[in-house]
Length: 358
Image (cartoon, rainbow, N blue to C red):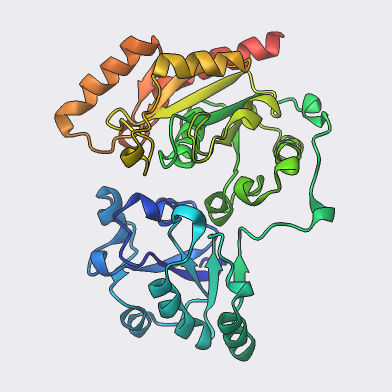
């Protein structure tokens, strides 16, 4: 029997969209909670795993909270908000649906920037019912934050961030897939998470980058890596990337190269995506892969291979898309959700051997 706290996941009709990437990660697993159901009107009556990728996970979908709670044998301890909206705002209709849950004593785990523990109605309801309001992105007190110190140079394990050419590509999921492929090949990989979903998945080493004051991002990253190396002694540390080096709405990734002193990276890319996510109306094109590889090189790191996001690709498009990417970059490319990451393992192993020889 699971000792994890029970939970349901709420996506407010968005489970079939990229907004629900938090829910996608929890359905695929791992997860800090024992997920019993998903509440999403668009997916009601189906298994969440089947909706997500055609694989049953034993997580039923319900249209409403009432329908869900009437079916479960016991109420869950928590409801996890499974969406990551632009700007981290909790939509009003979702807020209205969640408040009665708190009044019934069911806690809410919130990964958005809008904190329920600052909302008077939710605070009053939680106080009356005993429910817990957990805002994962709420910044830590200043006294608990770390400044970059150079302690990264004491870390034995090489660091390989999974960077992206855009946001919402599946970088965290790719970390899990690569870690599994390395484990199958006898390499012990650990993951340092940099977002709220990583924490929700139960990754013990990491921090929430986008809720950390800028002065302390490098130090919090370094601290997480140092702890990971000390606690787990892995052969390699994979770092979850955020957004992209050149995404104008949220440029990110330089710290994962410079502050982590990473000398290699995996690059995630969506071959069918032309513009940065939600910036199509601005005409903001994703730069070429060759220029992205060159930029990473300017930071002192080398891209070892590419992980491809399969969105908007038909069955007949997969191999031509892979071939085009490999021709352009002269690097191995995989579709992680489709085939795993075994084709990236030789390049990663070669990098680890080179690092040991340094």
